[in-house]
Each structure stands twice: as structure tokens, then as C-alpha cells.
Length: 514
Ligand code: SIN
Image (cartoon, rainbow, N blue to C red; front, side, top):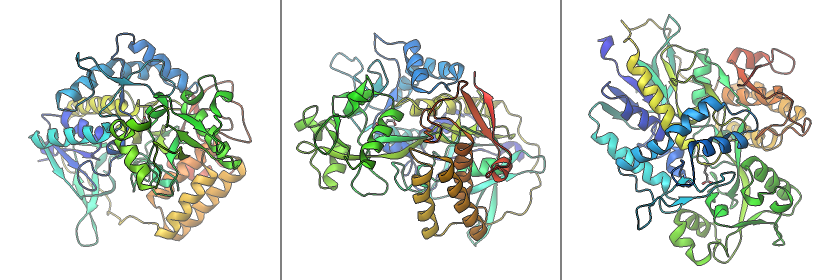
């Protein structure tokens, strides 16, 4: 029986669905917290997938751009492996029905995003890539005989067997308790942690749960302090905040203050197309100074807005803004977690039978600042790695013994709101020692009140790693340490280290990145 246990994939964004498809012919059980793909960040992706598909482009140029955006921390070997597969992965998605844009001659129509020296984003109807990718993947999964899908089945944690390996996942037993779903291996593909912040572009519920689950089993978390803030979330008071894709700046839209003055040319030679961390800090500074920040696409896109960027157009109209006539108010929002569960080139964490792919994992590809549209690409490649690796695992011989399955602790809504506001204020675009210590005090306080809640542990991993990194690098900006240290080091932390590191305890280990 044990030999027939499925590979359990948790999450139904691009990484989870791709891993499930690639794991054939192994039986896969795909668990989705809601309807398939519905609440994944993938579905909300506007840009598309970065790949060197144009004649004037190459994996080498793509790799160079990835490295130069990454603040000195990109693992060049990993990034090289990923970009080398990019064009094939985009073609593989096209083959299952994703209608990437091509012109009348059949050539790719690629968009340009910040810090890319070439137009290399495979897109779908301007800003519709996420929807189209999810629709095609859901259809492919429904045709895949080796995949069983369970929708509306949230996972509440991982279960460790007596030998320390991951024995499966914990789900509700329907009567107030928890039960084990045993697995040959578990592949986590749950996305990021933007929901820990008050202002985020992530779908609701993305609170870094997988980080907490994996860390409780002993997994190492890498580079947790690197949270990417997207500079142009539409600032109309919605939670989550809708995104105004970077492709708009690629088309020539400008960032202006409330007087209509452009501010990016004075900040960076690439102006609006500077690396994302730089643009986010410039927008943040204008808002803090009371000058405001707006994306003016009237000239660059104008009357073509509804046809070329239907998603952004609808979001603007919903907020009472007509982007053909008015600049769009924007603000930085937590968008993507560069850090995550440390994985190797097989998608494996350092816990047996536990794999992680996509945003909840950290390969080191993005370093301290992800290059736009490299994330869906990394999802595809890491999913393929993990799917191949689980196929090579020996099936477990028998059900491992495991301890009683606790019902997970939860934060109430009021304390979750307070945590999110504190994360935005104290571990946001700008951080310092006093603020991060205050944040850790709040996390301690909430933990005393509620117990070991996933969201609190994920927040603790971010805050502790941010406190420990006494330099500014990529998306991690310390106002009390505004320079980069001479040596770029990646950080690694475990949950016990995070719990004792609070102001004066063990510091997370920083290992030299290659
Ligand atoms: C965007 O469309 O601006 C977001 C793309 C990304 O985050 O990769």
C-alpha cells in the first residue's frame, strides 16, 4: 500500500500544477485550498514569462540581466540553469494551449520590463498572462489521468514521521480534528507571504504558511529578509491592491509627482526602467515627503488602454480613475518573496521527502532583487526538477509512526491586521534596528496570546533575518546601515535560531554565496 501513496502537491498555481503534470506517471494528489488556480498569485500575474525568445537575445544576456538586478546575491549557476530552459518552458506552455502573443508572421510579440536589456516577456493580451496560464493548466490537469485533485481542501501543516522525514500533510478530519494524508513525498507550491503586509498585491491568504510548516520540520529558510515591493500598485485603498504592470513603463509610461514632474531620471540612468528595488524606494520617498506618486500612461498608452491592458484598465475604472485621462495613483506593495525554503537543484529541502517549488522556495536565482517576470519561469523549472526527483525516490515501506496531530493555532482578525500594519511599517521598504526589534516584540506578544501561529512564525523568520542583515542590499534597505557590505552573503536560518535570535541571541548564519 505504502508504495502506492501519491506524491502530494500542495498549491494550484503554476508551480504546483506544473509539478503535478511533470510527475507522470507517478500518482499525484493535488490539494488546492480553494477552486483550482483561483487564489494563486499566478492567476493575478500581469507581466508574463521572461525568456530569451527574440533573435537579438540569448540565455547569456538574460542571465547577465538577472545577475545585475540581483544585488550581488544571485546564484549564477542556478540562474544559468533556469534561463537555459526558459524558451523551452514557454514553448511547452504554448503547446498545452497558452495563447502567447505572436505577430502575423508567427514571431513572438515580447514586452519590455524594468532592468531587462531586451524585450523578452512572453505575454498574453497585454496583462492577461496569469489568467490564460491558469486556464490552460487547469484544463491540462483535468486531462491528466495520474492526477487526482481535491479542491477546497486547505492543508494545515506537515507531519513528521519518527525518522524525521516528511510523512505527509495534515488536513481537517471534518469533525474538528486533523488527519494525515500520507505521501510518497510532499511538494510545497503555496506561493509567497505578501499577505503578512498591510499593502500587498498578493491574493488573500498568502501568509507564508509553507515557510512555517517546513521550518517546524527542521528545514532551513534562506534569504527570508528579501521581500520585493512592487513600485506601482494602484493606490485606491483596496486590499489586496491591484497592480499596474511594469509593462506600462516598458511602453513609456512615466512616474510623476503630484505636480506632474517626473522624478526617476534624477534617481537612475534607466529612469522608470531601473531595477525594481530602486524604483520602489523612489516612489516610497515621494509618498513619504507628501509629493505623491502617479503613473502617467496618457501619452504612452492613452486610448489603447482598454484593448492593450484590459485588467489594469478595469481596476482603475473600479477605483474611479480613467487612465486614458488621468495619472494613476501608485504606491509600493509587498509583491514577491525572494527568500523561502532553501532547496537544492532537485527542488529538495533539507528534510527528507519534502520538496518546495516556486515562490515558497529559494533557489538563490533572484538574489536580493528579482528581475521582473523571472518568477513564473523559476516556478516552471523548479517544478520540473522536483517532479523528476520524486520519481527517483524509493517509495516508503510503511506508514511511519507520528505524534498526535494538533489543531493549528490561529490569529484573530484584529491581531492579524495589527501584524500586517506592523510588518508594512517596520519590515517594509525601509527598515532599522529599532523598528525590527519592536516588530519582534509584537510577534512575541501575539505568540504568547495565540501560540505558534504559521503567520507569526513566517513573520518572525523575515524580521529576524532582516535584523541580522546589517547592510542595505537589493530589496532590503536598512536606513541605519545604508551601504552594502563588501561581501555578498546569503542568509540561512532555522526556526530554533529565529526564536532565540531575538535581540542578542544566536544570529542567522550568513554563508558566502557563490
Ligand atoms: C508586473 O507585471 O509588473 C509584475 C511582473 C513580475 O512581478 O514579475
